[in-house]
Amino acid sequence: MGMADVSEIAPAPQALGRSRRRHGESVVKAVLLTAALLSVATTVGIVAALLEPTVGFFTHVGIVEFFTSTDWGPLFKPPSFGVIPVVTGTLITTVIAIAVAVPLGLAAAVYLSEYASARIRRVIKPTLEVLAGIPTVALGFFALTLVTPVMRDWSPFEISLKNGLSAGLVVGVMIIPIVASLSEDAMAAVPNGLREGAYALGSSRMTVALRVVLPAAFSGVVAAIILAVSRAAGETMIVVIAAGSNPLFTVNPADEMLTMASFIAQAGSGDAPVGTVAYNTIFAVGSLLFVLTFLMNWFSARLVRRYREVYE
Amino acid sequence: MNTMAGSLSSPPKTAFDGPKAPRDPASLDPVFTVSGLSVFYGDYEAVRGVDLNIGHREITALIGPSGCGKSTVLRCFNRMNDLIAGARVSGKILYYDEDVYGDHVDPIEVRRRIGMVFQKPNPFPKSIFDNVAYGPRVNGVKGDLGSVVEEALVKAALWDEVKDKLKASALSLSGGQQQRLCIARTIAVKPEVILMDEPCSALDPIATTKIEDLMQELAREYTILIVTHNMQQAARVSDRTAFFTAEVDDTGVRHGRLVEFDETSRIFTNPVDKRTEDYITGRFG
Ligand SMILES: Nc1ncnc2c1ncn2[C@@H]1O[C@H](COP(=O)(O)OP(=O)(O)OP(=O)(O)O)[C@@H](O)[C@H]1O
Ligand SMILES: [Mg+2]
Image 1: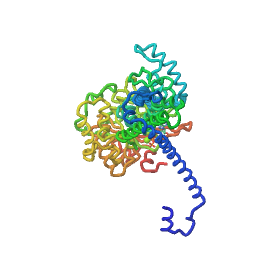
Image 2 (image 1 turned 90 degrees about the vertical axis):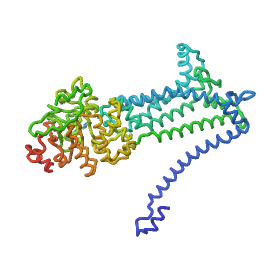
Image 3 (image 1 turned 180 degrees about the vertical axis):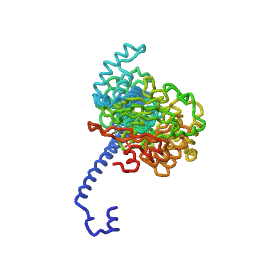
Image 4 (image 1 turned 90 degrees about the horizontal axis):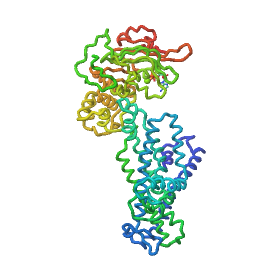
């Protein structure tokens, strides 16, 4: 509409009419718009697909039972639908993973961006990113056949053959590259003038990294951690293999546990007929995972807005 | 005077106060004695064989055409060049009677004692208060930071403009205010020397005048080195001027050289070297 207005106000004698290139541009614009709409539509589609069976689920199962009972066995007879054990299972493995990945990933990022020479960085960073490409099945067996036995040999405490600790640790290893690589990108984007200013005031390298660079890269670092948390909470294969499938209500990481993602995989690979409560349960848990992840994103966006340091 | 120079490997024992000693143009009471200074970036010798004395509580201007090595030389005084991979220094820079590049010298202590203000104002993306408090904090100053911050902002002639918004972001200030904030940030560490690399080149004339006045004021307490492209500025503010230029050697490589160093009045009215005269009269080519 802007176009039309302009030509009405100022009718040009010639040469200001539409050229052929303009048509090409509108085609490009249409293609891009389609792509954008497609991704929105996909998201809406996913939500819609989750919604219908989720609503179906809650017509059979009370919302109070779902959120307060600690008994989870939707595929048993009689079934029980207390989602708490699956949520705690997810929380425990995710917290362990984050406890591993955030310190190590941030340390790696600080090293790469503030300490390493350009040559070392050129070698280490791609190597780290290759780590992110290891199939999670392999990592799952690594947890089950190496990490767990070693822990069972050395730990003074009782550790189950399948346990949340081992799964969480290895999920943590899996997401280190995400934290490290994205945080390093954020830190590398901090203007060099800030570093020079800090050094010129008598800062050590560590001080520059922790007091100037890291705070200035705060929003990027938080984004990296959020992505890592989402990956950890949604990680399935490692948890299925190493943490087991017994939905114990426990806070002891050495116990076997079921997570939301591993429940979905477990139930989804069974033969629950479409439309049954067992089938709908999968979607209810999926919706819950979606909502929890969404809430975390929303919360951290607020956090970032509150604490970030804007440079430029 | 030399009692003021604590060892560079330990914190200083004295603060600066008292009136500025009257300048004696003929005699120079040196804070820095530079001899045979060459600076290399990898294999490239960017600056060759500089001999220079920096007078106590004087303003020394480093001038010369672009690329002649003024910044390179300036960054030797507080060892900022250490941070550039491949940069190397030969020759000597004595700070009082201590070698800045000596084996036992701690570069962090050097930078604490010899502050620096950069061409582009580079306040941290923190509040005004936190910017000024940064240096004292990282140097372990305890107690009332509020008064340290206020004192530094007063000395940097910025206090009246920011006293009601110390919590505001430093980036909400104008360019000139940001540069004075950077000066305040430097002063808050209580350095003995302040290095300034074209501190006004990103500022408008009014902000420039303010910073020049400030430099004059600060020279009562601090030894100041300033790199500038602005001849009038060098003439207005400095006590002594060092003129650098780039010389091509037998192998066709350009090196920065110190051409002439003298009292500013002499450099601008009666230079010895033809190249200095050409440069200050704008006939440089
Ligand atoms: N980090 C660096 N690595 C390699 N060479 C450099 C580096 N910094 C400066 N040089 C070179 O050293 C020489 C002197 O540079 P310097 O920045 O000291 O000049 P300058 O006199 O400050 O110039 P200007 O007035 O433009 O700021 C130049 O040839 C420059 O290319
Ligand atoms: Mg320069």
